[in-house]
Image (cartoon, rainbow, N blue to C red; front, side):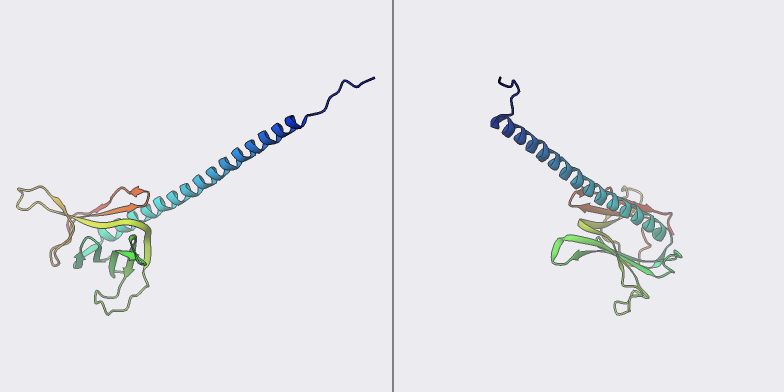
Length: 187
């Protein structure tokens, strides 16, 4: 008597292996995408936290800035802050190219003993933000004679009282960040 049970054919076995390989490939692709997205989100979160820290530092230092020693243009600003965290020393914030790539900018902060270029830095400075493709400062100029509206300018004349409002525009490879605007009452 013949048995009624029957085994798998070679074609059925190959189809099952192909289907299992397709499911495994799909699962691996999904895992890779999830890991990649997680890493990108972690980098974005770190950048947003760094920007929030920068905003707080700028607000504190700008609120306690002094008129003496103020100099500014679109790539750098120098001022003396009476903020206790810096000890009433000149602060220099500037946008510098990192390496040879002009589109790889860093926002850099240094605290100096004096504004003299030959003076030794009290600290070596610190990178506040890196990986920038654009970094520029702007200053709100008050209306001239009350006839014109206030306007943003890139350079601030040395010897003029410091502006009440400063703006920092930052762009990364992922796009423009919201401008950081710090303002205080006129000194």
